[in-house]
Image (cartoon, rainbow, N blue to C red; front, side, top):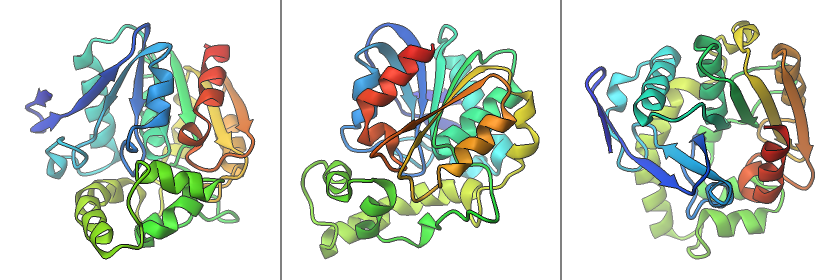
Length: 257
């Protein structure tokens, strides 16, 4: 656990693997059970995956009020972990945070990987409201293969329609979505579009071709806004592209960095 005084927070960090340092920032759902992407990354990298306050055993979400607070908090975590020029990888909400970090601390972050990041809003391509979804709706929203997604989300067991599962889900999500809502609700536009020009990191943008949560057209918008960037689309993958196609994402990261 990492402890910070300003604001007062205690942060759980999953660390696994060996090799070059890689910082992984999770999406609004937190780490998935036995997260396939973290497992894949750990075969080639030393992965540090902090959980935002409100997730897992991390505490202190009341002290993070807005996007700037969360971004500075993430930079504080990066500094305290003492990682050596890590690749910063962020998925969805975590990609939004990673992009903000690279915009603010653009001389400190040299390698950036954004996996279907949130943070932009295109009127012609609205993003679904995850805060209005029940657990049984998530697999088809996050995964191209909804049945495989259900198995990943439930770690191979559990019935998403079961009343006890629903109770546990709602209790667990109360804190997580309370934190995520500060960044994503009602829409994930916190001004990132106007700051992406500051990103000087070598940037890999990865999108699932079948993403129905944040349509792949957003990948083109990120690529246009970030000067030194490459966009890779992965077939037969939805929004949870890293969890659905972990080997393909790992290959893309290794090929680019």
